[in-house]
Image (tube, rainbow, N blue to C red; front, side, top):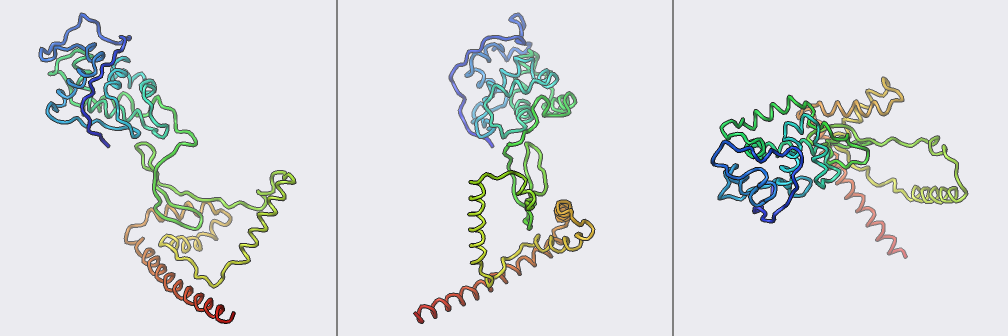
Amino acid sequence: MSTDISPPYSQTHVEPVNGYPSDNKRCDDSSVPAKYDDLVRNSALFWEKLRAFLGLTSKTLKVPTVGGNTLDLHRLFIEVTSRGGIERVVKDRKWKEVIGAFSFPTTITSASFVLRKYYLKFLFQLEHVYYLEKPVSSLQSTDEALKSLANESPNPEEGIDEPQVGYEVQGFIDGKFDSGYLVTMKLGSQELKGVLYHIPQTPSQSQQTMETPSAIVQSSQRRHRKKSKLAVVDTQKPKCHRSGYNFFFAEQYARLKPEYHGQERSITKKIGHMWSNLTESEKQVYQDKGVKDVERYRIEMLEYKSSHESGATASTVAQ
């Protein structure tokens, strides 16, 4: 995702820190009269030089967004170079310190990978010329730099805490069955496939804790309401339609149950993996059954509603 913005012209003053080059250094490229300290202190100059390096003097610079907010490339440039540059940050595993300068949502679990990617894309050349004060002619390509940094740190997430329980992740449901769902989740740059299932609570589990008198009364009331609901269940109502996966699950469950007796969780996971490994043509056989079952349900519901409407009319006339 990217956002079209014009270069900001507010100035940011940053005190020099360890890692800045000394004042007596000079860039060998005469086309770059500005100095590193100038880019740090003057954000307008930074954006001007960045656009020039990217060849966007007459175009709008598309700045990437991270976690729904525009990434401050000027701040990223300062945070990385103040720690010795991109190579030093990767080698010394200082991405966590860099990330701390930004207010990223906790749902972002691959911030170091994202920042490194954008740094190489937008800021690597500026670091080479202004911070390291090397000529443009000695600049290696971004692809070569990426390979070099990959060798330095095989794990792009080094220096970052592992995702904790409670992190929100995005994903979608691939299929549904009686005990849960087949899902695909995105965790940072990874795409994970798995099974999301519900473990039914046994009566023994519900009796493990001591109940207070008030809890007993509430439990009794809930059971009473549940019995009342069960009493009014319409047994004539058509059975809900099933999906293609439901048919596949029922077929495989009957086949695997004798072999995995009492291992409901193992059966569910195994069937989920089996479904994921089916080809599209193999899945289509079961999906066709699902389509037919939807049509069956539609017809039966029409008949059910029609019979109830006629019954209600007859009851009204009798009254």
